[in-house]
Structure formats: structure tokens, C-alpha cells
Figure 1 (cartoon, rainbow, N blue to C red):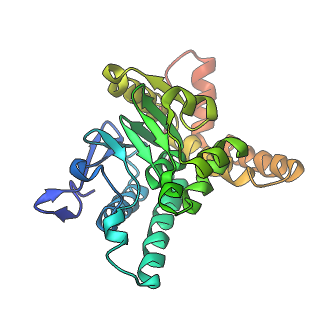
Figure 2 (cartoon, rainbow, N blue to C red):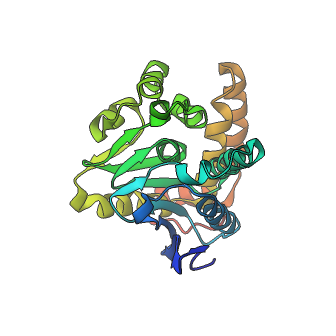
Length: 267
């Protein structure tokens, strides 16, 4: 896996690192509020593609440097061209990157230390899990500049109650971290001083589980969500049978019975 990604003004715009099976991707455009420029989207896509094929990585954390987590798309870059095809390509690239997070075998945790707006809020919603500092704030504020946040609406409407999502989308108002938790946008809210520890604890717990079960479970979870109840149970039963027939499930159950730590084998 690459140690850095695309470079802007001699500074890496995305920092990457792996420790004990946990990969951390850190947005590194603090002076631009970590906006999702075309280069940032490319860098994230390349890093996620690398991670998808790396069996040694068990969990991914998306973090950011500076006061903001991510302010969404780079508005100056968007206004640099009137070409419809340019704008379509930019939104397509962003949508593909977001879907890569969803399709990634490994769970992805958003570590939110500051504001997350528009496509930055979308990024939080698209991650499988999210931990926010008490000081973090969230908004889908495109409506304030005449641009309804249609693409952020996709994961927001799949994480939150529809009326709560529509309120954010139609008003552009900020919500605080506690409200984001109530709405279902984030899992945990902690003080800024313990944000690193809280994310590490969550990531380490997941990394200690069977990678095969985690990867199978993540894929199953999202697939069944769009099925009716009968089809979902049929699909989930088939997936559980497949999981039960795996070496990891046999090892895990034996270890539980024998009161010992399991030695996972597969992915």
C-alpha cells in the first residue's frame, strides 16, 4: 500500500498508514477545510482500491487534519468550469468513491474532529461507523448557495429518519454532535481529548474478530437492507449457513467451548 497519495503544492493531500491491521486515511488539506477536490477524490479512490485487495488490513479509519473534517466539494474548483460534462464527471467520481466505501470488504470508521458539511457530511454518512468529537458539527448546506445536496441525500436517507434528513437538506442548518447521534448519523460522541482512543478502541475490537465473518457480514447487511422481509431472511439464512461452514466459525465455536482465544484462519 502506498504511503502517500497525490501531491498538491509539495504536500501530500492524503496521508496513509497501517498499524496492527488498521489502515488510517487522513485528509490533509487543512487550509482548504479538507475539501473533496478532484485530486482528493482520486487519492481516496486509489487508497481504497489498494486496501480492498490487502488481506492484512482489517479495518479502515478515515480521519482529517485541521479544524474541519471535510467541507464537501471544492466550490472554487467547481466554479472554474461551466462545462456540464466536467461537473458530471466530478459527481460521478465522488459517487464511485462513496460506493467503494460501501463495497469495501473492511469496515470503515469516520473519525470526525470538526465540521462535516455537504459532501463531507455525505462521507460521514457513507462510512459504516462514525465517532465524533463533541465539538464536531454537521450540515448539508448546499441549499444555502442554491444547490440541493442530492448526492449527500443518498446516504443520509439511508442512515436517518427521512424527515430529519429532509430538514437538514432543506434548511442547510448545522446540527451538533449529540443531535447527529440522535439522528443516527454517528455512533458515538466523545470529548476531543479521547477521540483518538475511542476510535482506536472501536477499530481494535473489530480487527480482533474473524475477518471472514466481518467481511461476509458487512456485505450481507447492506444487501438485505433493500429486500422484503421474506427475501431478507432467506438470503441471511443462506449467508449464515455459508459462514457456519467456514473454518473460522468452527474454530470460534470450539474456542468458546474450550474457553480459549480463537486463532482465526480466513478472511
